[in-house]
Amino acid sequence: SQDKIGKTIEAEKIPDLDKHVQNAGTDVVEAKGGKGSATLSMAYAGARFGKSVLAGLSGRKRVECAYCKSDITDLPYFAQKVVFGEGGIVKVLPLGELNEHETKRLEEAKAQLKGEIESGLKYAESESLA
Image 1: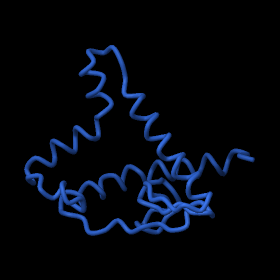
Image 2: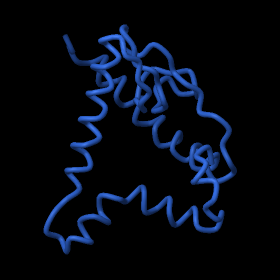
Image 3: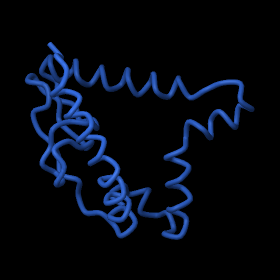
Image 4: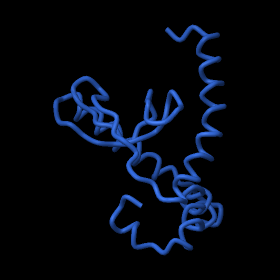
């Protein structure tokens, strides 16, 4: 809803589009008849992220999405846009205004994420990560 092109998509098409985005890797494998994967997409995302982190550390601020400690929601960690700078993440950006569908999906994601965060924190407490 915050993207000017995204705003032009008819509301009734959003749930189906949402499923395709969530299952994009599976869609790619199916489109290739089971003879491939979506690893290039993941590799590109990783390279873009790494390039932005390094640019930020060298003084050229960049905005990317990152999963990090956050107070944007009631969860201690969340994925959102951040500004990378010389000190790593120098600013966590707000989510912005969400439409009804996005608000519903956010609550669903938070319910799932809450349990995953709790599991991760318990694991970190029981292991020496140094």
